[in-house]
View 1: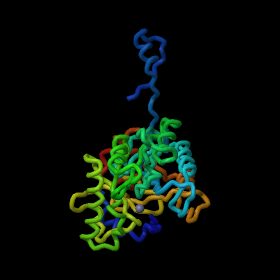
View 2 (view 1 turned 90 degrees about the vertical axis):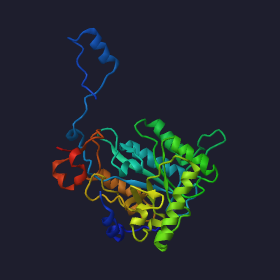
View 3 (view 1 turned 45 degrees about the vertical axis):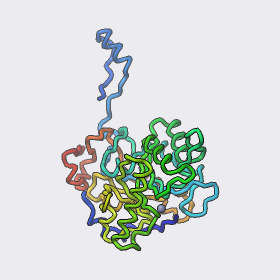
View 4 (view 1 turned 180 degrees about the vertical axis):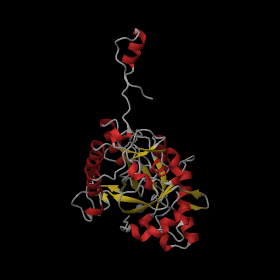
Length: 338
Ligand SMILES: [Zn+2]
């Protein structure tokens, strides 16, 4: 379903209301007792690089990419071909991005190697091109989950994790119970995109709450035990009041996702808006509205100095000392400026 690009500025007011906020160096074998030397040989480990050596910046920007359907014949700016998708994942792997789920991103559980960058891969509308399981229970060729698995196999540092924002009756070709359970069992995040893809801005508060609750309940019925902690707004449309998207009867989200059109700031930065997290539409460099799309944004992130770079230690928040003012006070105890 189509999502108009929503300028972030239009939502900034609402967002502001919600903002909260061992390894050891290998020793030379010479001079060591044989047992120690053989242990060192059996388990070679590399000295961790310092935050400065890897240029760590855990207050930098993170691309949250948004996908809809994969099709050989794109009919809108939201469609991509399986080959486009595969090429984008290859690029991300080559440029040292490591996927994390929306849930882990928005709560600051970013456990990726030193020098790498987090990317959040998100899929909306629970289309069959994202998840379709064959009779053998394995993902059908050219589905998003099949391409993710193939990319991860080729690039072992690239984790096949993503967030699927689903509606009721998700993944109809497979059936929602089977598809959602498969996703949950394979480390993917299943998250809410409302029951019937309602425009929440067009509903009154009670209506918006019902639409969100319906999506939540559909997931819980299909895959009991799923912990649903993230919501993507259909059409990027924010309900009134905006807090309805975060909390209501039967739901409470720690991340609410928009549609356009720029990277998110780090979850450790003062400017992070968990109630209105921007996303970037997957797009080629020459597609319509390419300046808001993933290809151009990945170019800009690679060229600039504001990209999130991990220090490899999920317990600390490392950044150049000059960025100190950007740190959210809630993370002061974990700060590792250099
Ligand atoms: Zn949608």
